[in-house]
Length: 201
Length: 201
DNA sequence: AATGGTATTAACCGATTCGGTCAATACCAT
DNA sequence: ATGGTATTGACCGAATCGGTTAATACCATT
Image (cartoon, rainbow over all chains, first blue to last red; front, top):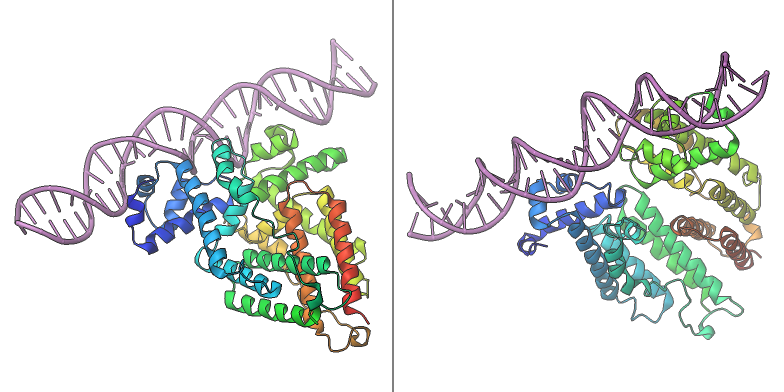
């Protein structure tokens, strides 16, 4: 990767990044042409090849960037430090919506890459993903103080309910072409408050 | 579409159908090659062109078939006739999992087609989709008898919670490469029962 | 206005892939 | 053997692909 890329104005870097995310997220690696990415970014194919030696390099760069940014947004959101599980979930989804605002196709790109099997990138891709694979442990119940919740409540089911609904939110956001992110976020806040009222003593 | 297609043994029809769903669901229309579909179905490209005049015809045929099958499965499940909202949701998701068992990539194919913008198929595609577009009204709350539910419960929020969690389930099933459908279904049943206990008087 | 360095592109290349055709072959019952 | 049917390999012209390169646009300094 050419160092000159980092000297570009941030807005142009962003355009190239998002163009890559966009095109790669719509197809497999092999069927995502460089000229399409260039056009989407509003630059010539030659210039794209000036910044990135070849397609493979660009693809792996995007994957690394996606991982970095995800970690960055999640930790910055403070959702890990939050002890209140409801606020933790809210902050988590808040971070994801902020990401989608700036990088609309990044999470879909990352998801697709997760299952990419093209020989040209498969091995090196797995090396990039491996360290983060163990981290996606959101599905399991975090430690909770049972005395805070209504008596007889199955905390495991409660968490699964909330986790799945949050996934459902992300799913909806991904599939709606252009959606009012703030509106969705407000709805989710309402849902969180609904849960607090429902589950807490 | 060549009538001979229907005279094929059902298993072979299924292979061709699923191959189409699979390949088209992984990329855009233009980037889904016929030879790939043929290979996936285990037949030659020539034979595929014998049954379907060209790519466009196959694609639109698949879309029609997906609509038909979805309607068929949903009505057969009895979820429309169900008055108990919890059982209605269960039957709805049950129908979808049954579909995924037989046509693993169909729903993803239908979702992608929904947003397909290729000029070659866009117009005719919209004609096929249009009648069903109004039907996807699952998001809005059906009529409910408030006396059945716990006092003070916000029925709208309750429904949204359940709807989103169900979407989350489908999302998970779609992204897991090969998943134990029966296991997922059992989990969902548990969730439904959890909700009944939580929401009903 | 000339200079020189940098950012950017158009034009091009050989290889591959594409949708689609067609003559040939495999298969199978009579 | 025969004849019909199911199926395929080989082929075609056009388009697309990743990648290169020589040329141009841009812009600050003299």
